[in-house]
Amino acid sequence: MSKISSTIGFHGFAARADRSSKTRRWFAAAGALAAAALCADAAAAATPKAIATYRDWNVFQLEEGGDTICFAVTEPQDSSPKSVRHGDVFFLVSTWKSGAASNQPSFMAGYDLKERSKPAARVGSDKFEMYTSKNEAFVEEPADEARLINSMRRGSTMRVSATSSRGTATSYEISLLGVSAALDRAAEACK
Image 1 (cartoon, rainbow, N blue to C red):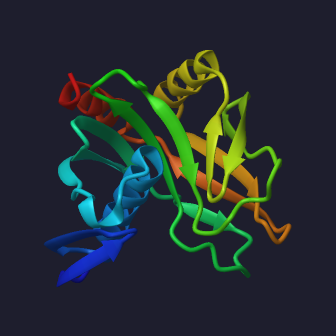
Image 2 (cartoon, one colour):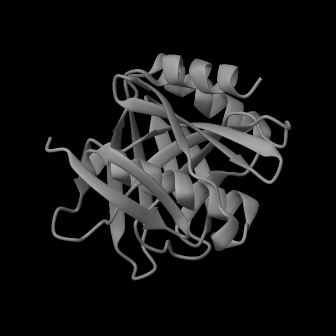
């Protein structure tokens, strides 16, 4: 990957660094996460700090509004259908130091998701339905969040399916290599 020195911005978040294109997209996900989670004024937004990389997963920390958010994030290894533009797509697991949430999985698409659709994450034979909010999807019940995290720790791949606001059925293959170490590091960073 080529290294490019540039300033990136997303939802008012900017970071100055020598980063690959993939890492810049993770910073964009961090900015979107913070904007969505904190509903902060874009001008007052903080910059996420890269903490570690574990195989296919990266760990970031973001300090904002007196709280710290730590999260593991990855991009899909494969996207379908190939004939459509997916934009930047991520799967995140977030923990707030304040305890507002712990190990909260979410899917972030590069497009708006169809309202009232039911995106799903599958690890092996385990299926977890999600609800949508604009371009994001979340697991409804905390117990199901914990079950999904446990399945992710045991699995090697996860498949996420969703429907765009235009009605296009999409599917993503997410590598789970490194997820356990990334989740442990994110939890440690937010103790």
